[in-house]
Amino acid sequence: MSSGMCPVCGLPKELCICEEVAKEQQRITVKVNRRRYGKEVTVVEGFDASEIDLHELSTYLKSKFACGGTVKGNTVELQGNHLARMKEVLMEKGFSAEQIKN
Image 1: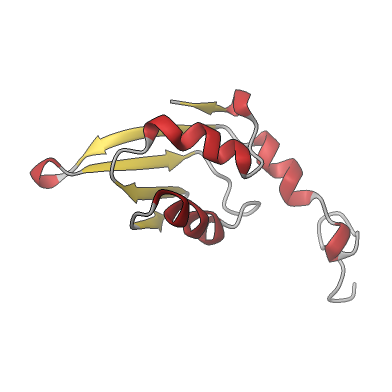
Image 2: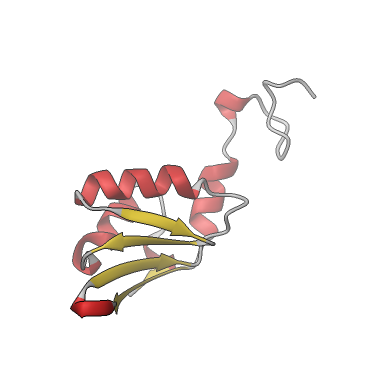
């Protein structure tokens, strides 16, 4: 296959819908953990890292919530408690509302 073709579906990269389909199939869990000194961290887990670009998603979420964060394994960790708005922001990004639970 040429470099302009998706290795999964065989469509050209600009027409590829693999990531959109993968977003609808993810079972995402959002929770808030307390760390040292009472700091809260929002943990978003349940992603399949082979189908979703977690670093790009992390960058998007950090800019949306104006906070710091990181990717650890198949989870995205954001500094602070962002539980209230996380579902709507993930839905804006294309994830299915039924697959996101708090």
